[in-house]
Image 1 (cartoon, one colour):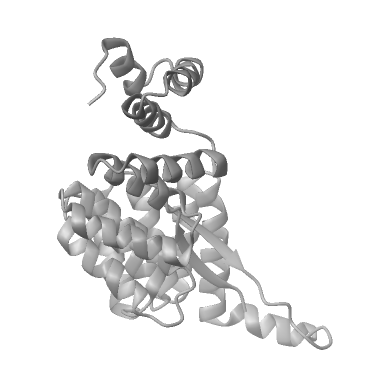
Image 2 (cartoon, one colour):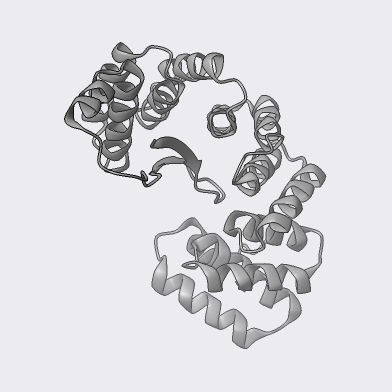
Length: 263
């Protein structure tokens, strides 16, 4: 059976995405009558149309995704993944009230689903309900079958930073890096925290690792530049300034550089 899995791309301010996974069936091909019975099964129809909606969602075709989800929930109103994906589509469309309602329906049907809890936590964090959001991230990681707890710890760290709860954020990012030492969101955000704490050596290690793993961002180049300025390496500072100018001349960080506002 295919199963819909909702995933948050764990970077500092990323949204949610969806993927589907397929188990390869064993044994001989089913007879036509068996296939027809599966297609006629309400839960199977709901699953199929939810997976189609996921594909359209990933391609940015929200209108068709919504129509597929309406078909899915008409076939089986109790199919929780359909309501969870409804919520993600409404989030993308900035329909906050409808997203909230869909999350509530989905969680009412599958309250322990870690992906649903994670996505609802991100929704709450994006709507300035950070304290409540963190509760859902921590609920997600308590599920022993959750395959990506690191992303929920990283997201909890982002929400804690928004509340200026630096110590809590630090612990969440450390937990995320214990699970995945290459988590970009945790590397960059913990690097920012270490910079504030005056630990420039560790901050440099973290941001340099981020810049090697993924495309350097305006934030990561700006942090790297300021670290080198603090430790007095003018050559490295100039190198990061040049990258910032070439890559992101319209960025807020480059404007700060031009004004000389380093802290």
